[in-house]
Image (cartoon, rainbow, N blue to C red; front, side, top):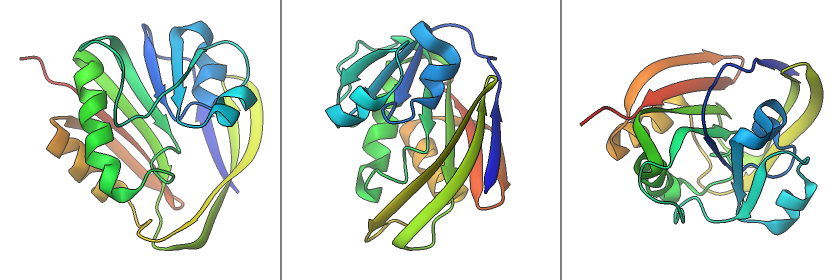
Length: 175
């Protein structure tokens, strides 16, 4: 079981891609978060606190430059690989200049099936969960997500890879 510690370090508005289910980012940042998910049942399951909207990450219904930060907490493992660049382009569009994108996810060689158990400290609230998928073309790693983020216009800030998972940070450069 992998351990993740999230501290409340971000200021400003946050768009959380795939923010339903356990709603980890919403647990940490509450009303500063707009959590989107393309499945209503996932939004219904998420704890109260953030604003919750049924929405596709590849077609964000927000104005350009609407958010200070975008987060994706174990989101990309559920997104088909062919939609990564579109979702990242949309995240780039809705971020303010110098805004940051934070990605936490798992390295996947193949998903027949794939599962990762996590013990998460969400700013003092402990959440134990398992994320898993069973699908074709699920391979991903820090390099593939970084490549897609760069194609969307992001500048890498840092990347941490350990124990089959990664945490990446990207910035939207000023014009």
